[in-house]
Length: 444
Image (cartoon, rainbow, N blue to C red; front, top):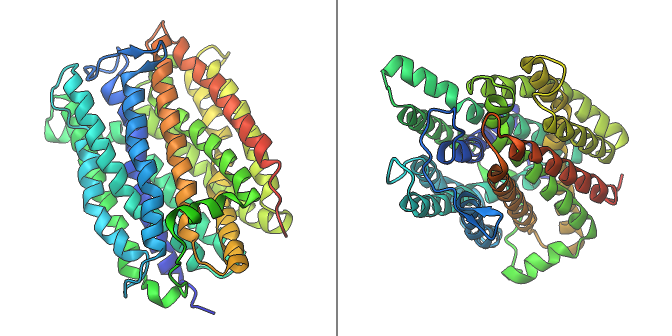
């Protein structure tokens, strides 16, 4: 049996997640707010609010086009990684070369060509988003495929997934605090322009992300831990073979619906705070931090409970709680509590789903991939994770696109119906996730 990661190496592996989670969540949280801000944000709109076919505004189309390029690229990089014969391993060499381009293009996304509403900004945004997604995918796909290869038992997978999820939620917190960091830039570096303060904060987060993404490469020698052999299945048959797995299909649909819903919450957080509840934008980071800290309390329960009664019951319960949370979003600002009480009820309720759906799906997929390897004799863990993350990204993109589309129906104080509609859409998505995952067959 191959070696097991030490605690230091497990933490180094999870640190890689902090980096790419921070950058991808900056895009989700800040893109709508930076390019199509609400009227009380103190920022200029940078792309026209053009509506095509009565429903699609320009920002939703840009977000979708960036991810479409990424979607085509995902299986390609997975196939290249699975088949790699590099003497340093199948995964790390790809990860190493992806870091600097990902940092660079994440920062450039928020540097529009013109500082006013312009179609030139729309073209620039499309280009930089495509290049960012391609760069970060070159890191993410090999990184996630490593999980199945450096763990030997289901318990180890859940444990490493837990550390990984801590990294993911730290990334969410950092990205949600972008406006808080911009406040610090304004106060300490005497930057008067709000847009410039936000840009500076984002560059700082990109540099931090790049540094932590290097940690798995420095601390883990892939060849010591992974005994997986390069796979020789061509690209298209490898993709088709993952879809023959019925469990994987149920997993995939529920995961897609969940990430679409999660992206709606992340895209809307600053709007929900400032427009529906009338709170300062800097409060968004605090609420996200409270949610994540509360979710950490559920990690031991999810770890030990899933080992005793299985992962499926926890995942189903998490989807059910999320359904109720989205109903609450529809009524935000109208409930008989103060605005702070309303938002804390929302974020604390979300802490259990965040823990369960952060830890368990990755471990479940690693189990599916490992079982498939035993049955077929081919190591194409990378392809399972590529297909998963293709659907995660499509879900995240759809979430941003849905949020951007619904802003047509109101995103400003006194005209907020578009923001409230996100609660209805999110409820429907979580219900779909619950129904499909109920058909997942968990083998003990």
